Image (cartoon, rainbow, N blue to C red; front, side, top):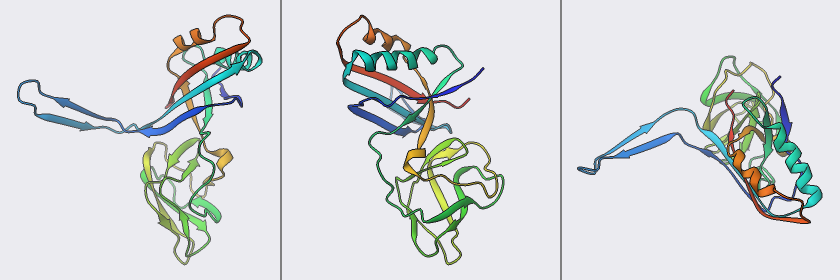
Length: 203
C-alpha cells in the first residue's frame, strides 16, 4: 500500500527547497553550437542538512527513512526557511473554473482590490505545492489569475480551496540517495554533517 509519511520535526541546519526547471543544454564539441530543450516537469528539489543530531534524534530519522525504502512510500516535506507569505491571501481563495492546469489558474474568493499573492509566495492546490511567479491583484469581485513557476499537473476541481497557510505548504517527495543512510551508521552519542536529498514525486 502506498503511504505518505510526514517528515519528523528535527533540527535542520540548512535547507534547500526550490522548483527546478526541466531545461537541458547540449553544446557541440565541434562548433560550440548550443541546443536548448525546455520540457515540462518542473520538480521541487529539497536538501536537508543536519549539523548535529543526537542519538535519539538519529533514531527518529532512521525510522522515518526506513519507511521510504523501495518505490512505494513517500515523505511530506516542509521548507524550514519559509516562514510567511508576502501577499495577503485575504479571503477564502478557491479555484474558479473546472479543468484548469498548466502555468496559470483563475481563482476567486479573495478580498477585493488587494495584492493577494506576491511573487515567490506559495500555495497548495489538491496535493501539489506551487510557487507564485508574479504579483497577483484581486479585482473588485475578488477574482484574480495566479501565475505559477512550476506547472499545475492535475486539472483542478472547480470551487476547491486553495491552501495558503504556511503550515500546509509541503511537497510530497521521494528520497533519491538511499546510500546516504551510511551517514547514520553506528551507535554514537552525536551524528554530524548529515545531508539528505529528495525530489518531488509525480506518482
